[in-house]
Amino acid sequence: MHRKQKNVVLIVDDSPETLSMLNDALDGQNLTLLIAMEGQQAVTIAENIHPDIILMDAMMPNMDGFEACKIIKQNPLLKHTPVIFMTGMSDTQSVKKGFAAGGTDYITKPINPDELIIRMQSHLSNAKITIHAQQALDNSGQFLFAVNKVGQIKWATPQTYQLFELAGADEQWLTTSLAKKLANFVVNPDKRQFPLRINAAQKPLELKYISETDDNEFLLRLSDLEQPDETVILRNKYPLTERESEVLLWISKGKTNREIATVLSMSPRTVNKHLEQIFKKLGVENRTSAAAMALQCF
Image 1: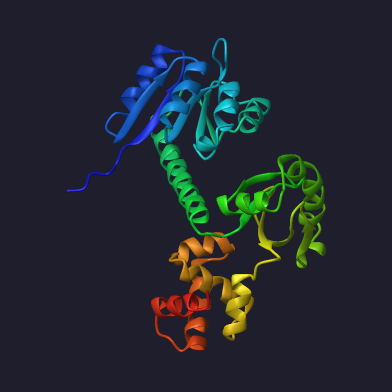
Image 2: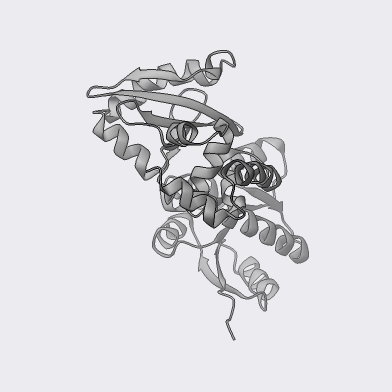
């Protein structure tokens, strides 16, 4: 029988009593528990082991939990790892400080074990969905990236970074000249209705606004103007709308309705409705046949 893999929990607290209580509370929950008794030790363990979730005491000597969380969140491999702060402080300023440091949630001491387990399960589930969606994006071959309101890149698929490199876009250009253009683009509803053309050092590029995927996060698609857009190729070959061509392109890359829905910021049900129209227009009965027709165009 296949046994479910255990989630790894890093508990960070300088109190032996708290550590003992948490060990007893989480025993039998199909978890692997790791212990750190101060902030720097937590950073070292997190960077080497990559836990699935971290329970972080806010107040500790030397490096406190807030500083440890900030350092941990700077690691790209740990940016989606939930951090739940455990604190005796429930004042608004402390709560804001925890979230500003990259915390996902907080729970006040004395800790209610049942409440903690429920919160942990929720954050573990959400983190896995986020990580799977990011993996789908990274493996999709799509030129997608997200920026914040000031135009700084928050994340990008490997293909996007490769295209920027081919276009001669160095780090300084991305963080200054491009960031300024993007900041003006993403916050202006009128401007983002139309593609934004930019001239990098070695080739022209085009940016298209897709959606606001999160608070202060805007999803964009990058295109090489010297290469034909795959969705345009599909629309030239078949009587598809722009959205239908995007869905068909993802289908041809073997993605599920849920993965497509995440990338295109729509519900799986909407993806399915587009598929119905695609099948009808292409004269096919299933996604395999539709994918085969799409691949014939490339």
